[in-house]
Amino acid sequence: MTSIAGFTLIELLIAMLLGLVLVLACSSVYGSLKNTLNTTKSLSEAQESLRGAFNLISRSVRQGDSIGISTLNSQGELLVTYQDINAGDQVLSCLGNTRSNGTSDRFYYNKGLYCDDGIGNQLIALNVEKFQLQAVGTEGVNVSIKVTGMPTNMGTNGLTFTVALRQKILARITAP
Image 1 (spheres, rainbow, N blue to C red):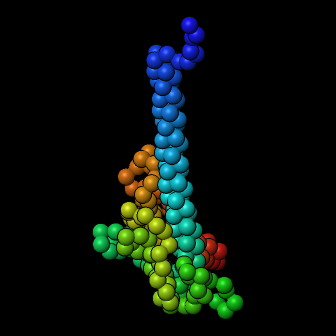
Image 2 (cartoon, rainbow, N blue to C red):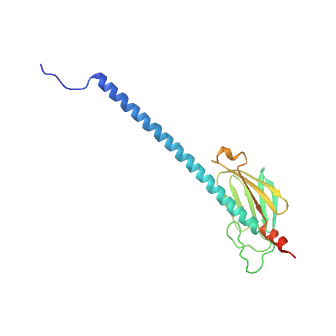
Image 3 (spheres, rainbow, N blue to C red):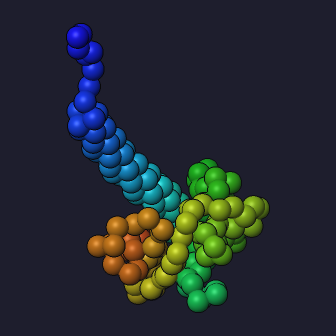
């Protein structure tokens, strides 16, 4: 009688079990990597929105001559007015348009952070949840922006930064 070579039922079951464990391990690693990539993307988008908003708001406030703070839809609204622009000065609005005396930039929340320079109105930061302002004397403002995807350890108000009317402060300091 000749013997037939092959696998027994037990050997096949063990091979299937090892294959299943391997597939489950790969699926688990893939899920973790996908979750990490989504978190990284969310943090990157939040950082980009915050950086853009910070750059535009701080440039406008530093170049401005007065600031006004109000509330619109329970969110902050910031008005930066330009008054003392001299001939030859290069002063740009939040949207990159040339400013002249009597013009202003308005930053406000409406399901995103917007800038209106009187010439155009444009979304400048995505996924903004909160935009709050607090005056610092008459020449500065604390700006708090919370963006979707920010780490929870950043607090309930998000990132807060302070900007001031640099032109006004320099004029006061250098005045005789």
